[in-house]
Image: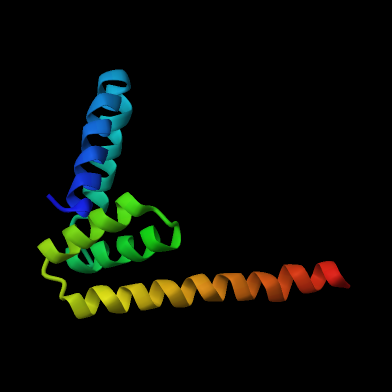
Length: 109
């Protein structure tokens, strides 16, 4: 089993344990996310790539692994996944730069 699979399985195991404690919360979360990832105006593969980019931006390792796996399952190519990584990098860099330009410069004046 790969590190990616181990981390995703560990997450799923922990969600299972959380469900024993907060069954309504876990059930509602799964229903909500399940609905959000259904194909609509945006296809399921693109939704997984969006989630991957957000997971990278949020520095969420399990989310990153999970959504790579799901994007592949929905037909994403390695090139599409890596372009998603590049876009997340651009957004992350832009976030820091824009906040520096706005907040830090304002604080300096």
